[in-house]
Amino acid sequence: MSKFYPIKQPGCVQLMTACCYKGHPLLRDDRYKQFVMEGLTFMVAQQRIWLYGYVLLEDEFHAMWQQRPPWEKANVRQPLLRHVARRIKYDMRAKGPGALELYRSHLADRVFQFWEKQKIRVEITSFSTAGEMLENMHQAPVNSGLCGDQIEYPYSSAWFYGDRVPPVNIPVPELTDFSNAFQRPESMIVKPESGRVRKRFIRSKGGLLLPKPPGSRLSGPEDE
Image 1 (cartoon, rainbow, N blue to C red):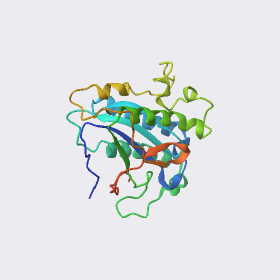
Image 2: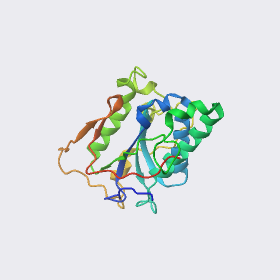
Image 3: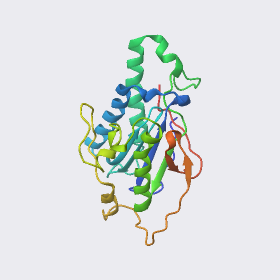
Image 4: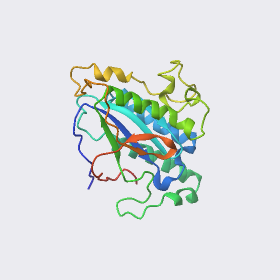
């Protein structure tokens, strides 16, 4: 049975993280990064989310979004990860059986596993925190040694908040400036009345700082 933790504030901005199984550099292959990008593009095109930012590293990816009506309470994360996992599985299977062995699962509900079962999702209710998290996301490829400058890295949304020139030859999802989330009357975002931001961070792989997720995280079958 699929389980997932409920959204405490439907309509709020969320920072979602997906870590690759056992820390394998699954997303080192640019084709697999593009599978993620195409999945995000589909979610935006289907009007399930407003996408505010993203970054894809070699062993994890992060996306900041806000679920649109009538998807505010839906688990949109799981279909995205499941879709990407299936595409990766089919690609690896075409290469031969050996490529998939690193991802063979011991769990009863799947044969292969591409994502860690721990779910990290942070609900952001502060404009300042959202901006800080986006900056950390865009700096992560630099900290990981994948590029020398944020704007050089094609698999993040740094271009959108920089020179506004999208990378070429890869699928780029439509982005919305995160400041819009704090201007929508229907949103449950709460603007901070002071400049104080409560910081609760854990260190992610690649040097990205993420807010510490409150409470435990339940798991669900996102892979096959």
